Image (cartoon, rainbow, N blue to C red; front, side, top):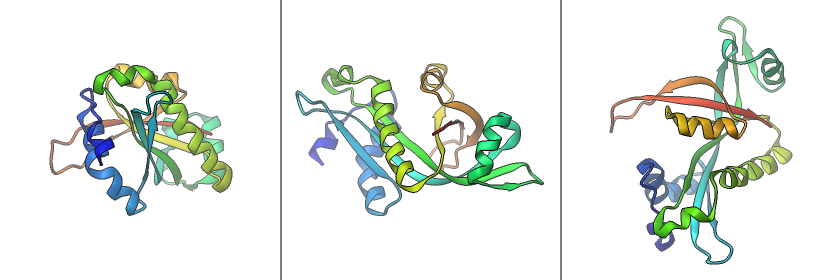
Length: 175
């Protein structure tokens, strides 16, 4: 717990809150698994990512024909609604630690590639081809995910009692 208390992410308080309040409980309940990333030299917590396996529905109109063909292999197609439903890997959280400047010891690209490596290992053992994530509608963030080979396929309204519901951008990347 002491390791987690030193994590700070002022750019996204939700990322910090999840790590400190939910990550351990979610892992114990097998809802997701959180991976802590430490620097080699100083053994400092530089970031983390959380992965989960979730059902995903993709509307056919939102993806290319090539993607549809690939999805058809691993999903159920509802022809009436042109919706593909499948199990997919979710990058549920991804965050860098901004305490004492340790965020400079890892790039966002390095952090997402570490997550991708774990997903590739799971895919090798279990199958599946779809990874997705949901992001705030901020151009810098969406650009980062596009640069890391994710593409937008839909949006989703959050359903939170605690705060006002808002729109998240859904992005996917095929293995």
